[in-house]
Image 1: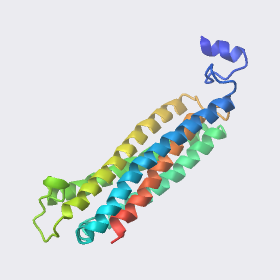
Image 2: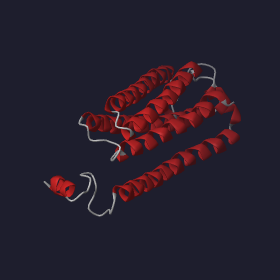
Image 3: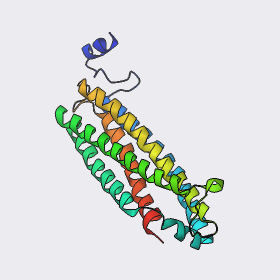
Image 4: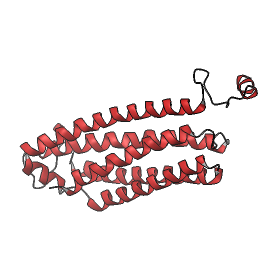
Length: 219
C-alpha cells in the first residue's frame, strides 16, 4: 500500500522516506558499504601484519609449512575467483541496463564460481587434516618437520578460514539478490543492492589475490 502511494507521488517504490531522491539514497548506501569494507580491510590487515611479524621471527618454520600447500589448488581457486569478479561486473552492468536475463545468469555464474572455490577448499582442508597439518596444539604431522611449523598453519587456517567464511556470506547475499532479480525488482532506476553486493564480492576476491601469493608462493 505504501509503495503504491509513493509511486503515485512520483517516488520509486524502493526509495526510503528519509531520502529526498534515489540518487541520495544510493550515495548514502554506497558510502556505508565503503565504510564497512574499510573495517574488513582493517580486520585482514591485522592478520597480514601478524603473519609478517611471525614469518620474520621464524622464517624456516614458515618456509617449511608453505611447501605443504597444494599450489595447483590455490591457482585454480585464484582463477575461479578472478572469473567470478568478471561475472559480477557483468551482473552489475546488466542491472544498470535492464538486461534481466543477463543479470540472472551473471549472478548464477558468480554463485557457481563461489561454490567451486568452496569445494576446492574442502578438498584442500581435508588433505591437511588427514596429514595432521593443523594449527597450534592440534598439529600432529608425522613426517619431517621444522620446529614451530604449527605457527604457519595457525595463520593458514585462520586467514583462509576467515576468507572462506566471507565467501559463504557472499554466496548467501548473492542468492538473495538472485531471488530479487528473478522477481524483476531491479532496473536502471534501482540497482543499488546488486552494485553493493558487487563491491563486497570484489573485496573478497581482492583479499584472496593477496592470500594466494603470501601463503602459496612467497618463501
